[in-house]
Image (cartoon, rainbow, N blue to C red):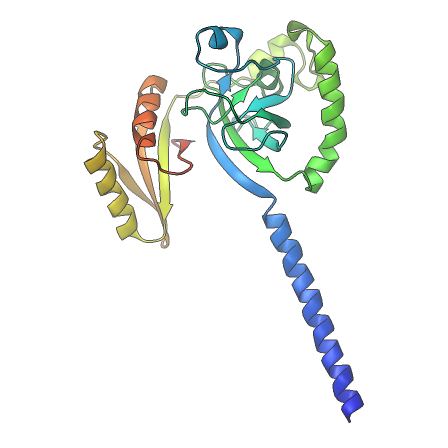
Length: 252
């Protein structure tokens, strides 16, 4: 009888262990994405350094970026939401001074790879763990691309998947400029209202709004803005209130 109980106990422990392993696997996969932000990126140019709008130089032939929060040598996935093109880039430094309006600084090469509109360089940026399968598959290609870039002049980089320069220009879609500032999401509407009151009382931004996304999700927004200067001005004002991870989102 005791022998049967022992077998049953061992079997239960085995099943529990399997379930726990599955849970750990899911948690590990979910934790691969540590940071996510949508917004405008700053396209590097040597003139920015001369004008002291940025504190460091970056190689425009490379697949490298500057970021203020992510660790040096960490990887990010950058996507152009207009056309769905994406690539993996590496953080060259997180100790660089540039305007908080931009979520990163990217190179001219990344602009070409993603067919970004230089007048409206809006990107989705997601940090990815170096242990993820996604990064592992891209690592070899990334190193090969980096070696090619280091040997090539900036104007001499050829990107096969984009075709000729004429095709690149056609791929850059020019949409109506309309963006909003996402301040935060809340579970309760009263919490969202409290945030709106704080914005009105502590800044000169008088038109924050609440958008109901679901029964348990309320989003506080500013905008819409149809001019990048007005957008940047309002972003800088709301940034002074020290909200975490403020995003710029398309008004769709």
